[in-house]
Image 1 (spheres, each protein chain N blue to C red):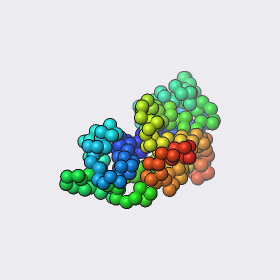
Image 2 (tube, rainbow over the protein chains, first blue to last red; image 1 turned 90 degrees about the vertical axis):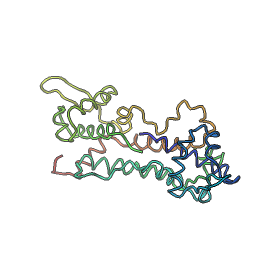
Image 3 (cartoon, rainbow over the protein chains, first blue to last red; image 1 turned 120 degrees about the vertical axis):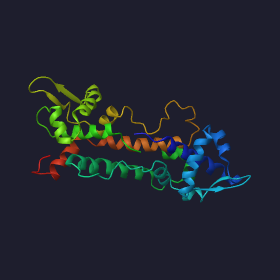
Image 4 (cartoon, chains in turn yellow, cyan; image 1 turned 60 degrees about the vertical axis):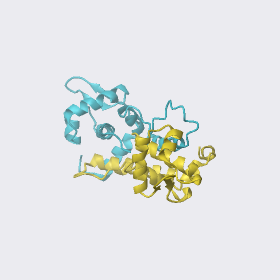
Length: 138
Length: 135
């Protein structure tokens, strides 16, 4: 199991924009410098996050990206689900499912997904960007 | 976020072994799970190394679970190599990186839960739901 590069970069992009978005639209070149990430790659991730309505793209000079809504309205779970395609372990059975596959799906993957959901329940981008988040979550 | 085929197939293989009273040949595992014999041989290498399955040679030979309390976490750690959602290990930004905490949360949710579920649990559900039906 691995979170993809897209998942990791995308989240860092959102956190960066949440932290600096007060200053107006943020150019990806600035984020790339600040986060030491490839600008090319950030462009792809930004496109996905714009299409899925987490970011707004502002064209023109002084343009860049803004959060589409306040960071306390953006759920981390939803972001991960978009970035990863689908964050669930459970897969819809393709064709006939054996008894073994069904048991693993119902009693492991499905419950694992519930655990992950529980952990992220209500966690917003606003909380993650707060420096003190770490100390009270863990 | 997906488990690899290797991880998924290894879980299936071990659940099947948990239902067997005797050693299982690769062929019988293959027939029961639909996983090819060649692939099963490959899956068994890390599982044996991690001492989750034992192999016996000879006429009565085959594979069996090494012990009854094997957890899903042990299987996935062995078969997936490592079981870390984000490769944050060795990253020098870890202290300053806020997203690192999210991956840590995700990691502990997945690891903690998969340590609670045993292969025997999954096999027992199988017997309940498939009573009389065999596998």
